[in-house]
Image (cartoon, helix red, strand yellow):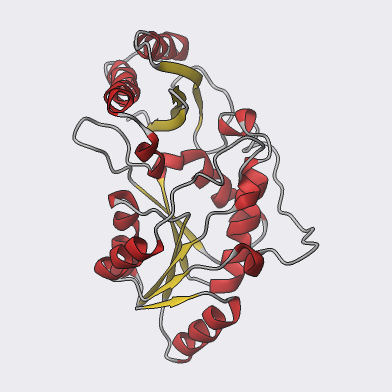
Length: 282
């Protein structure tokens, strides 16, 4: 497995693979990889001949006062995980490689980006769409793999690929969780021991909401109220949002009569965590 720092180097390798008729998968990441990322890479390896993993902490998806500078980074550990999972190439560019001087072109979107994290972080998805679009142009993959933990991001990337006629299959993969239910996240490393114990309330509350829906409740306000009550009972938790939206157009919808995404963002101390589940009536 190779680590490539330049756009030119990635394109040259992909062209060589294409001459051999090989199928290419891409797993975009911001690094500090964990078992959740590994599950994406392993699925990509099963479904493609070659797999590129991008490791890039994208500055333009962080808002003012967010944790860009503090975001954890460990390229050596990331490379080991990628190699163990069967990746063919790690693309780990510097910021200057991705955003040249006077960079001024962005990919923006309305609708799908306006609720949930888009409401709390109004410039976030412009940064996500721009960097993912660039990665798609650089790697020219057949398939790209994203985790459901960032469910709104998955919906946004699918919409972008559709709207811009990108001939790339967008594959969503299940959330990987800790034994107590907490969704795997690079930001979990920010949590103190006490905060880590408290963070389990997020998955516990969402599980209670899912059980209500599975038992026949269709009133979203009742389901969301129960989720909020469970989270609010944890002293270290501060709710950003708990919402039910249509899946995957991400519009507020408080009756579970269509496929819905129930999503939450919660501050545990100074760390913002997200989690969700998708419910589809049988």
